[in-house]
Length: 498
Ligand code: NAI
Ligand code: MG
Image 1 (spheres, rainbow, N blue to C red):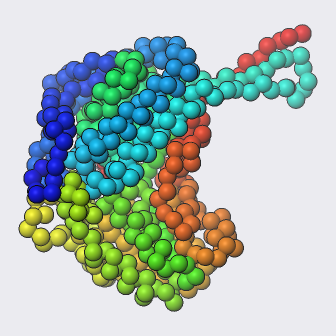
Image 2 (image 1 turned 90 degrees about the vertical axis):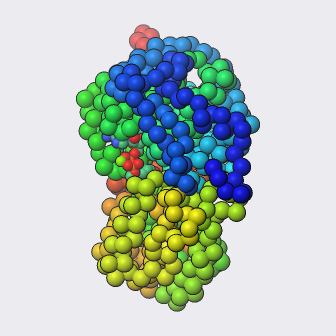
Image 3 (image 1 turned 60 degrees about the vertical axis):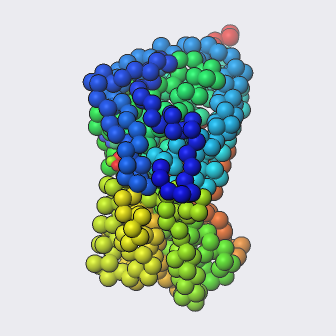
């Protein structure tokens, strides 16, 4: 929190420094083991907060509270539940500066990113889903056999939802999960990432303040094995919604089979950006920059495998490299900062190791390629924004999710080759296409094997637009009406009216 341009709100300072317990049934309580853990500021490496470390016993209590709250939440009229979700979104907007600072302190990202995406999109999500609460209708269906039955469907909540979220968008991920889960009438046990629990803790206060009944949302802070895994294994949890690493997603799938939990998995990616020679090159450079470096590259959708048509490759590479060279690393609370630190020393190590493997396997870092040398950045978890050329498909940097500020720029000669390169991955989350050719746009959009295709833009999100991956990137859409479907189950009612 030091540095000339860095100002922290008094309210944020006070909140960060308070005792942080678990929140179960509306009550704040210590972990049943009494254990706590430290949360660091990634920009400085300094201690930021001390948070309760939840255990399996705490998960039991939280799940029981969520179960008891189900009839309470479902007993409110849809109009009232809608109003509560709308008001939650509105209150987050009022507190936007506070929420933005909490996520910057916890995660490191530059504050402008919170102001343009994380906080307003969280508000938008709660308010979009508020609109759905009064519109969750079933169907009346005529049996094909023409028998004397009146048949209708009811769309019912699945029940108790466990939400396990990562650290890259701490507040926003709460909104992704809570918005549709609560709108559908479920109650929730939320497990934020151990690196970034603060905005979720503050959100719990706001949830209570707007009048959402105790137990409807419960918060268990803590680590994956000790708090996340018991939630994923719990036999009284009806659904798990998870965002994070593939290996963790596989563990959650395994855990879910005990009681056939419903599952939504939003996992990693290795998304391609295709730049055709007919593209608006300025737009392609700016858009690709955002696709790779937003949030320090810690985005599951990062479009970091960049393939450029040969005739414009050199110019594109020169312009992208120039833009990356202008990045100003620093504390995310400093308004001058355009890129912050990575979230943790562990993440910094992972990314530096992968960058090193790229160099060792023959890729050329035309910009960056290591740790920044600036003295004021040595205690934070910084990595230089990096641009690689001379990349080959067999390199680890072309296959593994890096989750750091690293672009790999390659070339192609034909559309067919571009598509083959783009689809040569076990992931299928997102993709970007830069072209002014309308026919090519739709041909390529259909041929890309990914859950999202952005054309002449990248990383656009909206509460109403479904989002989610193909292949190893997971299943179960988020956002939009489709996300609601993942938190509802259909009951069919047959009535003999003869
Ligand atoms: P992770 O998937 O291990 O952690 C995400 C969440 O899962 C956290 O809340 C964590 O406590 C919880 N968790 C961990 N192990 C668990 C278990 N066995 N059972 C239940 N919950 C568990 O991700 P991590 O280790 O923080 O990051 C590692 C890599 O994962 C990153 O380098 C990145 O490549 C990828 N990742 C992808 C994200 C995405 O948005 N798709 C988000 C975060 C990480
Ligand atoms: Mg992990």
